[in-house]
Amino acid sequence: MRKTFDIQNLVRENVRGLSPYSSARDEYVSDGSNMVFLDANESPFENGVNRYPDPQQRSLKAMLAEKNGVGTDRLLLGNGSDEVLDLIFRAFCEPKQDNIVTLPPTYGMYKVLAGINDVANREVLLTETFEPDLPGIIKVVDARTKLLFICSPNNPTGNRFSDQQVEELLRTFPGLVIIDEAYIDFSQAKSWAEKLDNYPNLIVTQTLSKAYGMAGIRLGICMASVEIISILNTIKPPYNVNELTQQRAAQRLHRQIEIDDEINLIIAEKDMLSKVLVDVAYVHKVFPSDANFVLAKVDDADFRYRQLLERGIVVRNRSSQPLCENTLRFTVGTVEENRKLLTTLKSLE
Ligand SMILES: *Cc1c(COP(=O)(O)O)cnc(C)c1O
Image 1 (cartoon, helix red, strand yellow):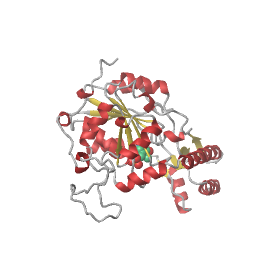
Image 2 (spheres, rainbow, N blue to C red):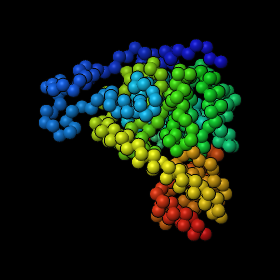
Image 3 (cartoon, rainbow, N blue to C red):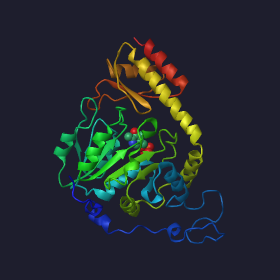
Image 4 (cartoon, helix red, strand yellow):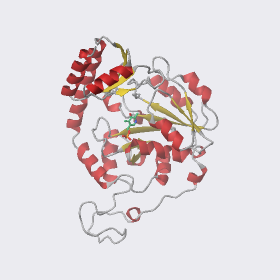
């Protein structure tokens, strides 16, 4: 078991001493009164985007804080969750010295970001049933292990990890545990963000890119202790979430009923797709999914992938991933798109 956890022991030395860039919008925070703004070298001609955006995204954070039941001081927003993940690397991992642990087959960006930040990526494969290999993880950890990435529900396998296993990792892993919940809205499971008080080493990331239907605006959400958020705030680019993104995200978050309807439809279609896929002759296995996609093992993934392309359907061939030989990943589309997919799949010889 871990001794008392001190986040300062994990922060990179250069980051520990940094103070954040102080922008004009940080130094004078508008209270809505009618001021003349001559402080940021902006154009004075109003066109909707001539002013710099709020660097702390206060109104958007207030909405997300209420939705997720966490204080605004435990939230950091980024240009997609990819930026949030990169900030975590840059705050905590010393290039060429520190290492991280990932659990393939999983989301490819963890490895890419480790490469960009020149941090060793210790890969511990999931088990045959796509569960974390706890003893294997503990074995690769050393004094320079900073981060563990848990993607749950996991991409590309679709399953989520058991609470018990995740809890054990949170309790025993000596560094920060990042739980990537990009697909949480499609799952019956509750967000780990509810447990932030219990685990000072927990970081939860979410995104508006999947269930919220806003991949194009790039909005990633990070939830963690006040201490971790404040460290990430010192290194984030001041205007990392642009004005258009802040506006569109806020508009969308006001339409929760519509979002819930879309999520429910996707879940129903996913269940239908999973059931029907089982009956396709060359589909050998359909993996259970808590996400908006289904992973299936087929006879020859390259061949089936090409056949689908020729018929106007693009899926993802995940065969290059460990434990995923001959698998295709099908994202759930509209009712009509899914019908076309199934008709096409059944017609293939
Ligand atoms: C799609 C996805 C994301 C989303 O990243 P954004 O940068 O927010 O679009 C994050 N994590 C996983 C596992 C994903 O599959």
